Length: 99
Image (cartoon, rainbow, N blue to C red):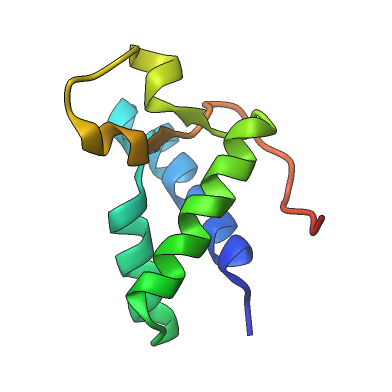
C-alpha cells in the first residue's frame, strides 16, 4: 500500500503532465483541502488524519524547495485559506525520499 507522500507524488506527476498538454498554469495549483479529500477517498481513510499528513508533507516540501507557497508566488493575501495553497514548479522534481 502506498503512503500519502507516494500518492502525492503520483498526483503531482499527473498534474505536471496535464500542464504540459494544456498549458494551463492552474494545473500546477495544489489546495490542501482538495488534495486531502481526494487522497482520503482513494485510501478510504479519515479526512482529518489525511489532511494533517498532506499539510505537513506540503510544508516539508515547501521548505525543501519542491513546491512553492502561495505567499512566495503571489505575496500576502487577505484570504486566510491561502495559507493552504501551493504551486508545483514547472520543471521536474526529485522523487520522494523518506527522512
